Length: 346
Image 1: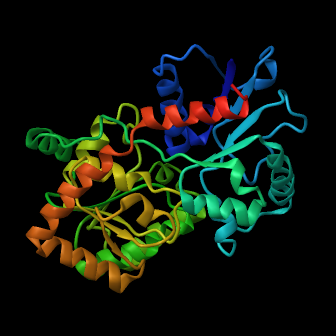
Image 2: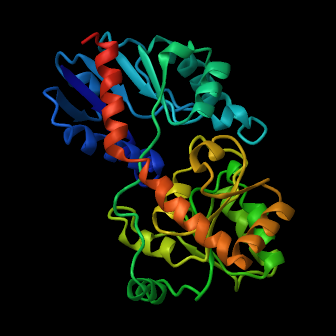
């Protein structure tokens, strides 16, 4: 079977985000499966001759990325989440993106199979795109093996390299409204604790979210408490793993997530996690994180509880290390390959 994987996400802004990581890891792990199927990687899927299956690793809501006419009878798509549809008050499309959403919502219905990261995302796909549940396959993401606890010497080195404080809370990810970063900044102001934010989004200082966050940091008088890292290398992830490992706690304050990969990455690095109890996050974290409501009061209470209770910290670190081991890319690839074979009726 000739399987074509669309690598377009690796040529766009998604390259350094979760979608880019998913695409890279899926491709590498598919190749490592030892399958007799031929895996073709290309961003120009229409130029591949005689493919049996095409897999689109990302569903773009606001850009018409799916071809009008199917280049092959069997198409598979991964829909990571539908956050903009669930939180429509925060994500309002313009005329062009609205038309793209309309077109994409129609074109996606012809897919032979849909892959998604969580049961919560599956329920959203059923609700918002009216795709039959039997077409949807929940396949969780994996955690890179390079995410693991590092030595005290490496932590000291990374703190010197990035001028990090001795003790800090950590957040890794984007700055979209669903991430709830304004509340996290208020939490930091209340606790008077250091916060390290690792986010490539801060490279784009002109986007409204970054402008507002910068103003808020100044307005709250916490400029001396917040360290923003926008250029941490994501491939390899050695520096990021050390930044995780050096944190007193990882905080995921999100209002909504389709999966929440940084939660697992932090756990894999031996860091206790405080996470909001919304959307897919309880599904991903299980009992290995301290789950709280995504409000300022509850996050402050949760962080204080975690940092002051040595027994709780040890328990969550142990559970987190065990939890992260459940999620590996080889399993993700193996389950994805089974979807290909099922829809191709092999």
